[in-house]
Image (cartoon, rainbow, N blue to C red):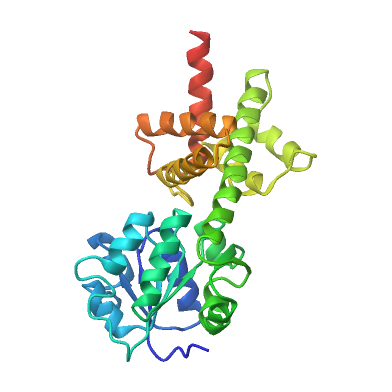
Amino acid sequence: MVQLTKPVGVVGLGLMGQAFVKRLDEDSEPVLGFDLSPQRCVELGEHRVSHSLSSLAKACSVIILSVFNTEQVEEAIFGKDGLMTRHSLDNPLYFICTSTCDPDSIKDIAKRCHDLGAFFLELPISGTSKQVVQGDCLGLMGGSESLCEELTPVLDIICPRRVHVGTQGDASRAKLAINLVLGLHRGAMAEGLNFGKSIGLDPEKLLPILQNSAAASSVMKTKGPLMVKRQYENPQSRVDQSLKDFGLIQQLGNGAQQHLPMTEIYIKLLQNCVANDESLLDNAIIFEAIARNALKKTK
């Protein structure tokens, strides 16, 4: 098994990256972070930040990748002055990729890492950044079972609940299927609350009724209160992230010749949020997109 004798690297100090740092801090494991945003680096602490990816790779053996998309994963590893720029076989690197990525591309990235003597575990997360901090998320592991076992000391800290899905690429496929259902649950709840409001019901009173009915889902617990209070400023998961994931879902569906009609509607609602400068807000704000659509239809 991997011995945690060096700091754990965290590339990407956004919502998820910060959540992993908190998990590691709680276990008193040293952390070395990297982010292109100076503000995020300041938030972590200058003494805990590497100023280049290549220097972070020299200081760490295990590196958690928590960046926005597949392209950023590839750039972080193989780009100019990237993690593999000065990689030595005497210092094997273990990458844990928690980003939701294109399955075929992530499989290719994993192979390139293997060919260069590094190890790559796919670990997209089902759950919000808040759930990660609480240890209540589900990690989807894509890679060999032996690699999963080898990384157990780190995985037990950052993601106690996890399941082995298959090889690299399979975990992203599973995550995208989960996100499809999750997003549509979110949209259905937003539409139900808007419907209730339009026929004279108080959304704050309707939400607990829904939560205790046959329509209940985990989304109601995490996103329902944000919708009824219309509080979106401190996101647990953002609109732009959801739109990125649903773009991948639609792309894969098209490739498999599988029409996804509800996905198309959901993408349009997310695009409505983007058009209203809500990209960086919590994706619970889809409640407002549906409300705006209702107003548009009545005019």
